[in-house]
Image 1: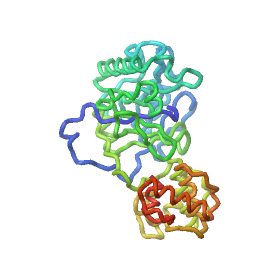
Image 2 (image 1 turned 30 degrees about the horizontal axis):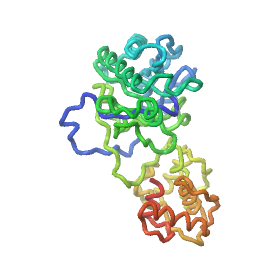
Image 3 (image 1 turned 60 degrees about the horizontal axis):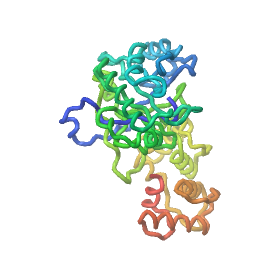
Image 4 (image 1 turned 60 degrees about the vertical axis):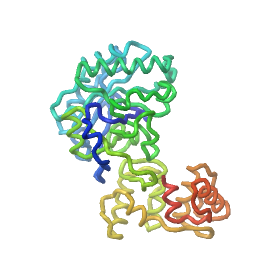
Amino acid sequence: MTVTAALLATPAAASATAQAAPGRQATDTTVRGLDVSAYQETVDWSAVAADGASFAYVKATEGTSYISSRFSQQYDGAAAVGLIRGAYHFARPDKSSGSAQADYFVDHGGTWQPDGKTLPGVLDIEATPGLPTCYGVSASATVHWIAAFDREYRHRTGRHPVINTNASWWSQCTGNSSAFAATNLLWTGSWTGTPYPLPSGWSRYAIWQTSDSGTFPGDQDVFNGTQQDLRNFAANGTYTPPTPPPAGAWPVIQQDYTGRQVATVQYLLNGHGAALSVDGAFASATHDAVVAFQTRNQLTADGIVGPKTWQALISTVKEGDHGPAVSAVQSELNAHGAALSVDGAFGSATHDAVVAFQTRNQLTADGIVDPKTWLALVN
């Protein structure tokens, strides 16, 4: 799947009791995976498993004329090392009907069975470079096409397909339809350090594609739930994703994430003695620096930057201060619309940008970056 891939949802077959159950946050243990296609000609699945992958999605088909030449090798290879795996179909609504493509997908590897190791199939529907964004298909016709695929896939397998899309494409090409949010799980693709925004209708996601490169071959993915949730997903063909964190909560940043929040963590770690390249990529060096910082500060040394680690990392900065924490503030302010030089010097321009940000966010507009302003910045 590509950067624009995105899939999130509420489970199709969840019971009323499950839907009404108290909200459950995802645990701090990241359930990581990958998605691959014929572009990844050779995958060392033993190494993938050793590096901590729990699941994989493999491209099977596209339209009604393409079968990935690497599908069997990748699909069976993932299963052979104990990964839970599934298949995905790349939609071409300009080529043939949704029902025809669902049949083609199921007939060439996209089926689901309750064996505890096979994930439901995925409908990957997004733009293709070089083609019209919406394939020349109207929004209403696209919604009908997806519905036809969904009906036929469910008829053939007993389960709804997961939908892989992104908020921008979904808005433009379906007219912000919310027709599938109650039935189809969502996979969201975002390389910015956050899975949001989600396509219209969805308030939860099942899988988040965080990057197109990293520890594993292909794209890097995170499952929104626990290992047991993943097993339940494979066994039952659906599950209930955790509720999103409350508004204003500290983000949880961990290995394989990318984006501005990772860069902020790297700046802050450097302010506490690390010597990281601030590249916005949470790789092994950043993980190790987080663990070392957590150990020194008597925090759980899991390499995950959650609320307690954020609060230990940040420091109050104001005009006249210098250093990596100021660079972090400047970088975050730029992400929120400022145009500052990220030079680590808290001068008048940075002060004015802080005041403007605080005013917009209904904070005390004193130009001092205290914990409340930090929290607003990193969100």
